[in-house]
Amino acid sequence: MPRIGPLSIALGALLLLAAATAAAQAAAMRVKDLGKVQGWRENVLVGTGIVTGLSGTGDGPGNRATRQALSNVLSQFNLTIPPEQVSSRNVAVVMVSASLPVFAREGDALDVTVASSGDARSLLGGNLLLTALRAPNGRVHALAQGPLAIGGHRYDAQGNVVQKNHPTAGSIPNGAVVEVGMATEAPAPRSQVTFVLTEPDYTTASRVAAAINAQVGPGLARARDASGIEIQVPLDARHEPVTFLARLENVRVEPDRRARVVINERTGTVVSGGDVRIARVAISHGDLKISIATQASVSQPEFIGRAGPGVATALVSNSQIDVEESGAVDFLAGAGTVSDLVQSLARMKTSTRDIISILRAVKAAGALHGELVVQ
Image (tube, rainbow, N blue to C red; front, side):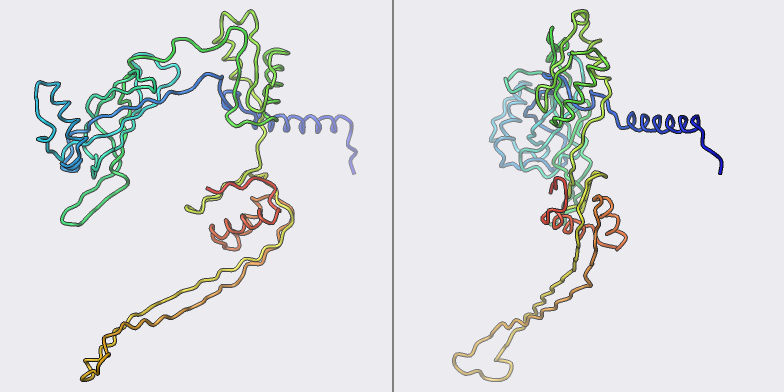
């Protein structure tokens, strides 16, 4: 057998170290992907508008809000029509909403969401008239108008209805123009900034502070709690806060992940981290189906001759109950991960909803070492 020299051992150790370093770098994320600087937030804008050009699918003539709104619009063009004389199924009153970014400036375009607020059957083919979008303080920040993109339709005639998706809500890409922006400069304090994690976690906050101190400058960052990291701005960087914040955003750190399994019984979806652990557990799962069929029949005494007094037609119900139980699934799961359990059950041709029931039972038994989120 050939002898392994010290040089070969050293080379092997270096290769293992390089592989571990590459894996750690692959798992590391930028700080900007984990949260944001405190004070950076989008602002909600909302307004009430009118959609025109509908093909008889708008609000009904009895909708007073629609009649009043259309009368107000026509009055701006020197057309004075009382609201009670307005009657049209080609218009609809809608609620218009948009999100204003923190660094939005005059002239920027925003996406707009439009939803019917009346009894319109469909907004397909409609065009939104000029609508002012206001912030909660009542100030107008943007103006919206344009044709709607619905992504669905509804057609009905003589009681027959054909509908696809949801035709009473739509959007206008780049349908609003910002008139008043929120800020012109980065809202960064002169001496320090606070970085806020999207998902609060003490371990991740500590790692972010340590990574900033190692990659930007020692003693700059301190984890205040599970969500906030206080970062001191050096004296030479206070005149260039954008450059300093750019360095902070590109600091790489490996965040800690919570053991969490998310299940959705409505859609039959199971999403789990690959490292969510389970203890050794025995599983026995069966499928019980109960079918109840009821058949109604009418007893008519007149058909068999003259009926006596007190004899009348009766409705008789005959019910049949069928119980079917399929073979149970017996499974002994050793200590491993949720991913291993799901893959094993899938190989046994267990349905997704049965897997969801099994996961809930495993959690109730205390064998699932993680958080189970049911949507």
